[in-house]
Amino acid sequence: MQGLSRRSSLLLPLLLAACEGTPRSYPPLRYGYLTPFPMNVAEVRIEQRFVPSGGAPDVSGIDPMPPVQALRNMADDRLQALGGAGQAVFVIRDASLVRHGDTILGNFAVELDIYMPAGVRTAYAEARVAQTTTIDDLPATLYDMTKAMMDRMNVEFEYQVRHSLSAWLLPAGALRTPVHQQPLTPPVEQQPLTLPQR
Image 1: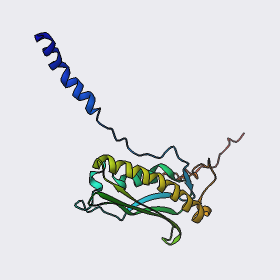
Image 2: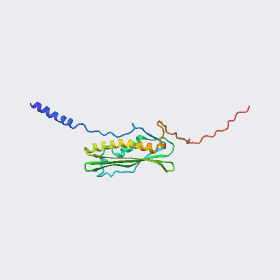
Image 3: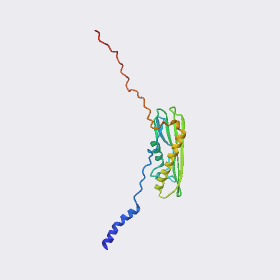
């Protein structure tokens, strides 16, 4: 009996660990598997015009995948600069997760602006999604909410870009416009060839 009780005491921690389960992992949200946007611009830039407060009721800092980073990943993974001039500016206008009691309210808003070399904005597209979720486990709830909102944002963003910026999209499989290079040193002057007289 003493050996049985000892064996039971050794198995108890293992049984408790099995009941608790393995800790949940939160892989980064990336979007390279989605259709990219080949843009007829020379550069893509990201501007973050929304800054989380970092304090209550803002809870985006607790999210294992902060919304600002998820939106940056979307721009990095999907926007391609393949043109010879101009600039596309991806603007993060809202990436908020706010807690009200047992509820989280999320708002994501982005804008894609097209600028010509003179700095004049010639076209733009906007996309926005919102969602409300009841809290279960806070980090898991925030991660799952961000993932769901980003899935919808990718769909909405693609629709708005194709609707408003179709003139700035290149065909699928387009290659980057080659950059014309200037030689760093001036060409050596060639002297006229003098043939020996006979």
